[in-house]
Amino acid sequence: MKKFIKNIWRYKALILMALPGAIWMIFFFYIPVLANVVAFKQFRLDPNGFLASLVNSPWVGFDNFKFLFQSGAAFTITRNTVLYNVGFIVLNLIIAVTFAIIMSELRNKRLVKLYQTMSLLPYFLSWVVISYFVYAFLSQDKGIINHWITGHGGTAIQWYSEPKYWPFIILFIGVWKGIGYNSIIYFATVMGIDPTYYEAAMVDGATKWQQIKNITIPQMAPLMTILTILAVGNIFRADFGLFYNVPQNSGALYNVTQVLDTYIYNGLASSGDLGMSTAAGLYQSIVGFILLMITNFIARRVDEQSALF
Image (cartoon, rainbow, N blue to C red; front, side, top):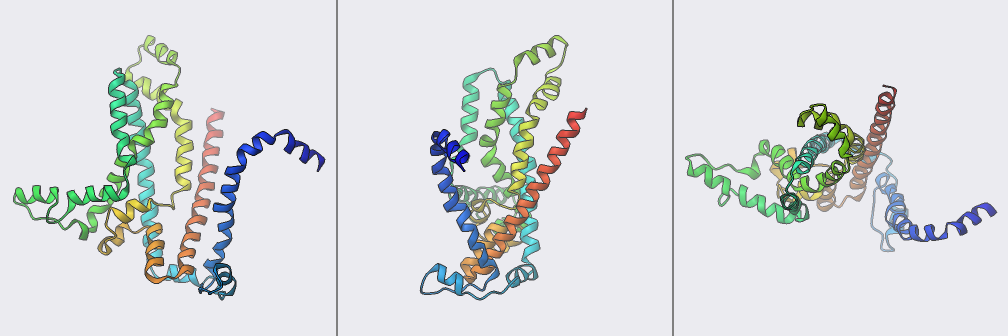
């Protein structure tokens, strides 16, 4: 105990620096975890407040989870959430790395700053604003695309009633919005590579593609692995603004645009069933945690095998 107190006093400056963040984590992450008990209750509001509601609501065990999985919605929202996130992970990795390498090869620094600024602008736009941009293109009556189609003798498409187009639209808009932000850290990594590697490669007659394949990408591989693991940890969490605002929450598109986050929101907003919504959220967190641990384990094994060779 004395040693513990001595260490606290010894590192008091560091502890004081970390204290605000620790308090924020406790109040907004760890304490709310206790409210997951609502997933196992038939939640009923009590006039004496939330805690009284929590205590007095009857236990229903796994009934909320049964309702979620028996409703048929669980498969659809899980499929959409996982497949979209897999698509985002793959596309963001490939496009962000490619964009970062292209930027690093430009010799005009003003052009690099211009391109990076232009690519970053969408990231700072709200999904509400972007949803109106998308609507300006896809509106049936006034949309730019439909005007072009009808102007060439075609028939206007009811974009917000045709599910088959939306997987591509969602992926395109999601990647477009994040390309600038996702490429920054890769660009910084490329710029931090020792230039003597490239000088030695040029002396040996390596082409630009060979330099990228044998120097740039291997140097970026650890960072790519870490960011991919973090992304897989959030594979059960979707961008609510993208999936709710851009498709305009159209019921005709639910089969291809509804994910866990929008399902939880719509379920709570329409039915007010807090127990079922909490069960969906808990299911989302548990599966995401399991996937994160599995991915981390696989990455470690791959790293160990690579070290042997």
